Structures are given as structure tokens and as C-alpha cells.
Length: 315
Image (cartoon, rainbow, N blue to C red; front, side):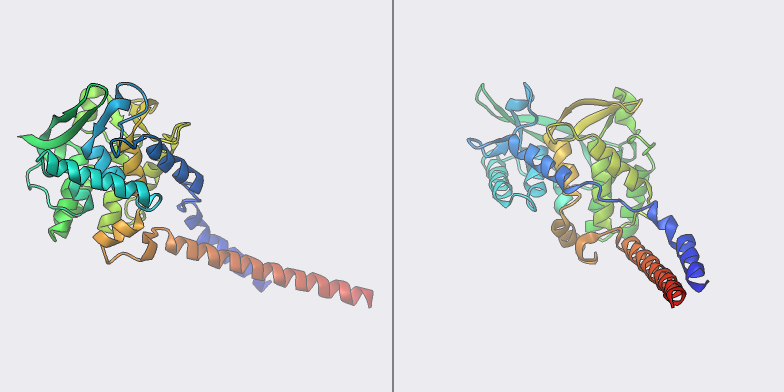
């Protein structure tokens, strides 16, 4: 009787945790397909990845954001390509004299201006059969609270400046724009499309800030939305329409930001207070282990009782 009570208590206490566990999502196969997609965009003559696989995107190369982010995203999976791309990015930044983007580098702990400006696109190399561009935030001042991605960039900037309350404040403004499909911000209101890269940006920011999925449960939904947008080539498709249908191609930026979520070494370097592996679900997996242990113990008790009864019957 006691083993039945123990099993019942285990189910009542621990079963709710099962619904919150990310059961192997994404799989190792999905991760592999994603980084191989990025490698498939690589041009060995330039040392860069192109924007996407169809014209004109297959001849367009962005120093930032695309290649800057790709160089970090590939680090755990292909250090060879990561190193080459990172060196190329740095060489172009010096060669063209363009410096930093004033926005994207905050992903990796670099300081950005307190006021985030609108972006301007500059062509820094045009050879006819390919073009190399940068996206630099040096335009007009933007209201951060209007755009989910800017909220996350600002949250990271505050965090690295030691403004923890400010970081959480801006993160929550961006987080609360999520409506179950994507981030309905000013950009979505204007063009009628959800940008999937913002899902990855939100999750990455939460990880760097050390925020939990228990406190922000929509993070699990965002992660699933991202990987449901993986196409047959392995890349992450860029947009959804207002009904949630996938729209557009997979590209380097969205796929790289998605992989960046799993660069635990980078994330721990930005927030040394995080546990090894930055595993949000560690406590839940411990609970599952306890549950399985109790089930096995109860099974043992049941088998022992059955075998004892049969043994006495044969005697």
C-alpha cells in the first residue's frame, strides 16, 4: 500500500513539471542542419557568407549584421569557418574605415551609443558579380520602446553597463510585445510581417541576462516557433504573416541568431554568474529523475510482492 501512496504523490507533485520541459527541442539534427546551411552560403574567395541562396541575395554579403553574427554563431560547431569569417569581418571594418555598427556588436558585450539611431546601408565593395554592404545605425534617433529588437539591444547595453534594473525593464517591454506568433511592434504594424529573428534575439537576451523560463514562459513558445520555421535547406525562414504563415526565404541573419542561443561558452563569458551549460531546465530534469526513480522503486516493490506470493503458492 505504501508504494502506491508514494507513486501517487510523485505523480501529483512532479507531473506538472513535465509540461514545461523542452523535450530535446531542437534536436541535434536540427542544429546540424542549421549550421550546415550557414556553411553552404560561404564564399571561399571572399571569406564571407552571402545573405541567402537565391538571387539577388546570393551575391549580397553583409559585413554586419550577417557575417559578424555568423562568426560567433558557428564557433561551437565549425571553428574553422568561424575564425575565417571573423578575421574577414575585422579586416573589412579596418579597410573600409567603417568601425562598429553601433548596434549589433552589443550582442557580444561591446558598448553601443545610449541613443539607438535608425540604420543606413553603405556599399563598401561592388564588383558587379557581388556586393559587400554594412548596416550601420547612424541615422535619426529612434524611440526604443516602439521596436522589440531595439528593446533587446538596449537591455543588453544596460546590462553590460551594470544597470540591471534598466536591462530587465527594456527586456520586459520587448517581451510583452509577443502575441503568440511574433513581436507585434511598430515594424510589424507597418509592413504586416513578423520578423522571426526577433524571437531568437529575445531568447538570447534572456539567457545573457540570466532570466528564467519559469518567469518568462513564452520563451519556450518562441523557441518552438523558431525551429518550426526551419526549411528543407536547414535555414530559418525570415518572416511570418499576421496569420502565422511562414513567408520568405531562410537567410544567414535569422539562422545565425537562432544558433547564437546555444553558444553557451559565449553566453557564460558575458554573464559569468550563469551555471555551466546555462541549462534553464536543469531543475526540471532533476525532478524527472526523481519521478523515474520513484516509479522504478514502486515497480521493484510490486514485482517483489508478486514473486513472493507466487513462491508461497508453489510451496
